[in-house]
Length: 477
Ligand code: ADP
Ligand code: MG
Ligand code: MG
Image (cartoon, rainbow, N blue to C red):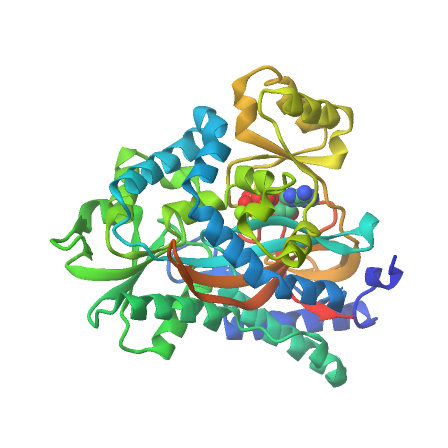
C-alpha cells in the first residue's frame, strides 16, 4: 500500500494567516475564470457563488489514471452495443420495470419507438465513466458507474485544471505542473455536439440543450455551449426546459423536431434523468415526441436505459461482457475494474445477496434506478430498507454493490461560507467519452478528458451541486 497517498502533493505548511490569504487568492482566480455556480440563496441572474474546489490537486497513481483513460473507448463501445440490444435490455430490465415507475416510463417510450422503428438511427453519447480506488485491492481503480445522460462538469473541469496548475506555480512548484494531466473535456464534448450537427446535415438547424427550470450548474453548461459556438459560429444553440417544450415542440412533415419553428438537429439533455423533471404526463409526452423525431438525441432513450444500475449489474454477471466484446483482452481489462454487484430479484440469488448485506451492511451500497446523487442507501439504513422489502417484488428495483473504500488524503476544501482547514478527503475519478453511431456501426469514439470529484472522507456521497463534493484534479505519482 502506498502510504504517501495520504499526504498532500506539496507540503504547503503555511501559517494560518498565509493560508487564508492563499485561499482568498485561489477563490479570486476561480471567480475570475468562471469556476462558479448559481447561488442557492438567490438564483436570479445577478448572483453567483464559487463552485467548491480543492486548493491542491490530489495525488493519484499514474498507472490507474492511464488505465481508466485507455479503457474509455472500450466502455463507450460497450455501452453503445448494449443500448442496441433490445432483447438484452428487455430481459435485464423486465423485473425492475414491474416495480419501478421511473424506469418503466422510460422503457415504455423505448418500446414505442423501437416497435415503430427509430426515425433517427444515430445516437450521440457524452459519457462519464466514474471510478474510485479500492484501498484493500492495491489502490486499483474500480467502476462506480457510467453516466449516459447529463454527465456534468466537462465544462468546469478544464478551468479547475488550469487553476490547480496556477496554484502549484504560485506556491513555487513550477516543475510539478506537468504532473497535472492535460484536460480537453469541454472542447471534447463540444466537438461531439458539432459532429452530430454535421451528420444531421442541415445548415439552418440548431442544437438544443434541454435544461431544468433552475440550473444551479449553468456555467458548466455554458462552457460547452460557448465552445460549440467557437468551433462553429454558424451553429445556433438554444436552451429550453421540458415545460417550454410542452408548449412549443412539434413534429414537422418530415418528422423533424421543430421548436419555435427552428429545426433541431441535436437534443442535448442536461435534465430528464431524474423523476422530478417529469412533473406530469405532459413532460413524458414531450420526451416521447422528441424520441420520435428526426433529431439526434444525446442521449437517445436506449442510451439512457443502457446507463441504468440494473444494466451495470447484469454486465458483471459472468459471460455477459463476452456477448458484447469479442477481444478477450478487452473483456479482461473491463472486468478488472468491476466490483461485486448483485441482483436483488426475488429469487435464490437475490435472497443470498440480501442475506450478505443484512449480515455486514457496511461492506455494501444499496442502489435504486436513479441518477444525480443522493439516492443510495448506506450502513445500517441498508438493513432497514432491505427488511422493509424482504419478500416484496420491490426489491427488483434495487441492486447491491460492494462498497469501495478509497484511500484518504489530506487537502483543503474551498467552498462558499466555509472555513478552510486541513482534512481528509476521498476522490472519484471521472473519464469523459464521446461516442456516436447507429445499430450497424460506430462513427466516432473518443476519450476526451477527466474530472476528479473529491469529498470529505466522512461523506457517503459527493455531488458537487447537491452534496459535499468539490472539483479537483489528479496529481500523477
Ligand atoms: P448516481 O448516479 O446517483 O451518481 P452513483 O452510483 O454514482 O449514483 O452513486 C453516487 C455516489 O455514491 C458516488 O459518487 C459515490 O460517492 C458513492 N458510491 C456509489 N457506489 C459506491 C460504492 N460501490 N462504494 C463506495 N461509494 C459508492
Ligand atoms: Mg449517475
Ligand atoms: Mg454517480
